Length: 116
Image 1: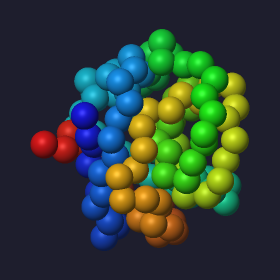
Image 2: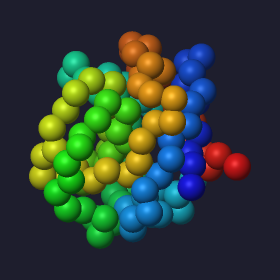
Image 3: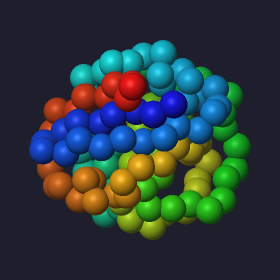
């Protein structure tokens, strides 16, 4: 399954992993949210409710372009810079075109929907 993200002048997709947390996110779509910069390597957006943590567990091969859910805060994290796994982080998928769209700075309205 793929998701479409639209904010500022950016329109990009992500391919989801097949895990319970990713499926729970899909069940909420479409969503109108706000996306903002966090730290120096990611953008985040808060969901209207927390997702299931059944897809949790340590993962490796962290990569720029990963789409994750951070369970303790209930937010999506999209990484445009290197990062390391930490407890509570669940990988949902990866951005299909890389992380370049995430380099637009600032806070913006964000639409998340299923990509046909």
